[in-house]
Image 1: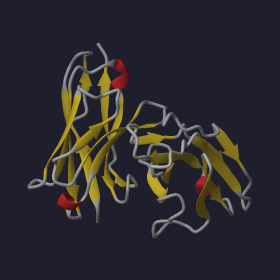
Image 2: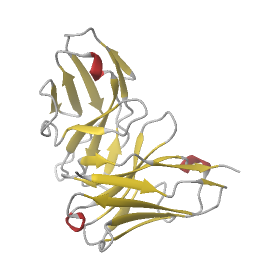
Image 3: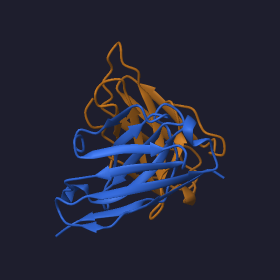
Image 4: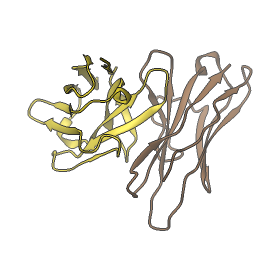
Length: 118
Length: 110
């Protein structure tokens, strides 16, 4: 069974840092692009970042560019999101998703909650 | 590419068909547009129901269908069932600097 399990979400003050992890299983991790998508409480979805299959290329949404860094360890089947200079508007549930087909996201993890608040 | 607009809510009776629109897709001759649709039940992670405008993943009911015309993509749910009550999001992948944008979301009530 294809599975994505996120972890690392926490309550952090504005300006703080956090690293999210996503453990993948049930598929050949090193052949897929991976993404992070977030959802603010009660709001819609926002694409955050993606990384290609070997980790050599990544892209970011403008609102997180320069503050977030996506990476992966294919030997550990794990995706990461390093978040710095966090802002209140970064609060939300962060989903790890597999790129099944041209930014077609399947499956999704259950999400990990990041709360940025004093 | 700017934000994609969806109606905030759509409702229908069991057995009816409804269509959810996703507008604001800007077309450029050199850009490609890949539209996907996601269903999200309360407290759950989203689930893909349509890839590449109109392709349905295996395991997704054939009551769901997608299309695109001009600057609007659409999701049609036919034979509406109680289990279809959820929020639906469109998503666009383009080759411009935006790269990926979600629609505003539509709450479907049966």
